[in-house]
Length: 552
Image (cartoon, rainbow, N blue to C red; front, side, top):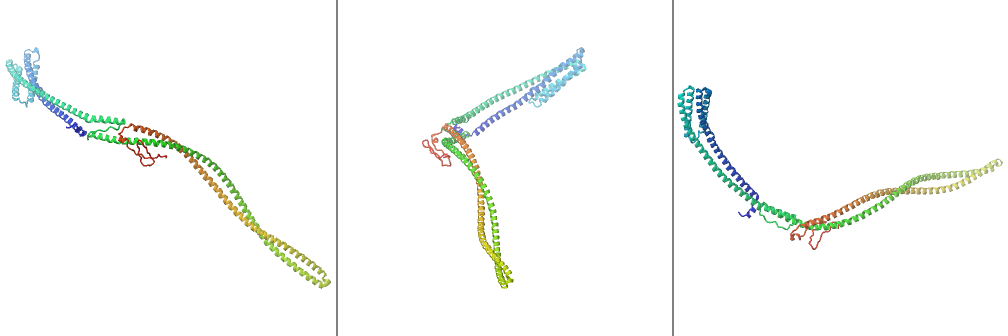
């Protein structure tokens, strides 16, 4: 396989392949181990069957036979010389050995039931059975006291024991040969398994070496290059190109790094240009805020002076409103008195009209008196004429008639004087009535003017009060504007501090942006920045054209 082709292989596929190979090696080792364990268990079972069950049971049978023959001799000696021991106990020991021999023979026969050496097994069974039978006959001879028969039976038993021993040795040799064969086969398998294990270990180490080489060349080395590239970018150098690492996961990571570096270059380029623009705008903003702070302080001083003047104007308007209220009260009092005078003038006019009417009645009465005096004078004249005609009898009546005529003349004169006076009085009364009528009309005009003046003064007082309230509201509003102006002044000062901080931050941002090293084609490119909703601007290193700052 081409080495460069590994760049296009997926790390997931390589990892899965390595895991599959490792799993196959583990399964192979596990299978070999399982096969070896199964074969070893079979060999151990066969060896146990030969050495433990068959040989041990045959060995116990042989030992029990020899021990039984020895105990038979001791039992016979105890019968001959009881001082050596209890013969019954010795006979019981012989029976125990015979029972052990029978049990060992049965165990041997059961263990060798499926043996391939059936002839040897049958021969051993015959020899052992003959030995056991001979020993039973010996036991019967000892129990019956047949010493001559016991000696003959002892020779037969020894012959059977000798034959059994030879067959047992033959079986032991066969068991040893079988055990040696099993051990040789086990050793051969162990050598084969060892060779296979060495081959597997070599294959595993080769696979691990291949995996280590692939990981070092196609994983660790690209990752180290990636780390070095990241450190170079962290140091501010963005001019290094990202190499091609294929289409696997590492290659995709390099492609993502290349995209990130390109985006970072664009961002740093825009940041570099925008930082300079922000720095210039922050300077203009700081200057504008300083001018605004000065104008705000001037405006605050103007507001305070206006507030002081407005306070004084408020006091003057309050005084004027008080005077207007007093004038309104006086005008109201004058209007009341004028109305009272108008009422008195109306009553006077009524009285003058009554006097004028009564004077007319008096004139009429005087006219009646004058007429009566004229008639009385005529009657007196007639009486004088009649008295003259009467002569002496009529002298006294003539005197009375003269007196009556004189009285009538005086009454007529008085009536004429009264009429003259009444005419003069009527003229005066008429003139007074005319004047009083004119005075009443003038008084009514005065009352109307007083009421109008009272209404005007009331309106003036109301207007002065309303003006006072409006001026107080204006004064309160101006005080609030003064407070707002002071707050604006403090805010402008704070904004100026923020503008200075922004200028310092822009300077630091420009310094940070200057740390990055980018290609000249990217570094000389324009940038886009928007200020005061103006159109984007472009700049170069020689000529800078920016949108106006916010305060301009």
